Image (tube, rainbow, N blue to C red; front, side, top):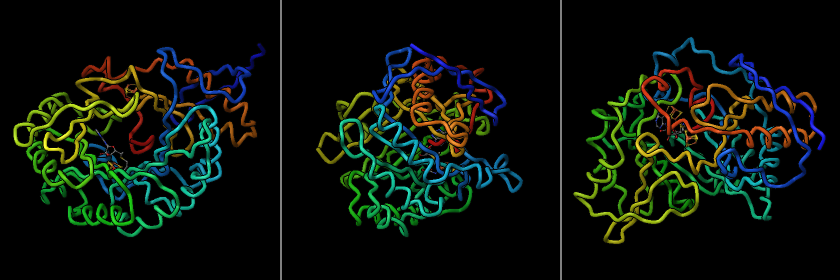
Length: 366
Ligand code: SAM
Ligand code: SF4
Ligand code: SF4
């Protein structure tokens, strides 16, 4: 087997990783070192956001002087589509557009249209999802649906106006987010997911109200444990509300029963209401790590590949694209990166690892 070296350097982090490429053709990516097969690609289409959620982009760090990526650093739509096509040709079945706030990216519907023509290795259409704070969803729901977006996840951390405004830190109102969810529902998005990041002493009092509000609506609330992503949010273990407590709180008011996962690698643990009126999910990244089935990778706004949400550096695919490498050369490099992957951050998390410098979630995508 012939091999050659492609040096993939993460200039942003000033750390480099040498990658030896193999000559494999268009076949599914090999498993990583723990037998995990790549299926899910998350693409951050912008590192900017109009919210300043205190757990993600706190104003103290992401203030007026914060330097976001210049336009020329962003992957353009052709580059994103090229990467999505290449990943789909090697086993990826799902793509999630995220950020930052993905609906801030100009003409995002055009990108979705481009992605919607891509086929998986089983010749099925790619499943295209998007996570949004919903501030532009009311305006864009129809155009997103028409472009071929399959699924929408909306972030909403509380139904209590004061709490929600304090958490998004830009005084954005609950009613506007609900309007966005309603618009998405009206244009035909099914099983809309609502993400609520739960922080002790901040919005844990609002868990039951959130579950009750969406019970019977067809939408699925997912309660997410507060994570130590990035290096800006001042995370500490004491601020985490374990999912087991959330399940307990909801079950005490509205009985729920654990349900089977829909597919291997599903991050949310599913619970259905005993009266048959829908389901909720809990994402226990901190208290019950699910690294052993993690089949996700992330492409940053400027085209770096991160094989774990808690990575410290990424592999620069943009430099490969812009230096004229062929699809096969890039696919070989990605295949090798994946085959060497041994990520298991959540399984080994300590207060010390939480303090390590890691990339920000708004840059690599949630
Ligand atoms: N701006 C979009 C939004 O908020 O939906 C998409 C990007 S956001 C980074 C993606 C998801 O990550 C959101 O649901 C958000 O609540 C979640 N998130 C951000 N920081 C988090 C943290 N520290 N712990 C857990 N979830 C977090
Ligand atoms: Fe923006 Fe989403 Fe992060 Fe909130 S969670 S600051 S909406 S990117
Ligand atoms: Fe996957 Fe990394 Fe999260 Fe583990 S910590 S589930 S490897 S992204």
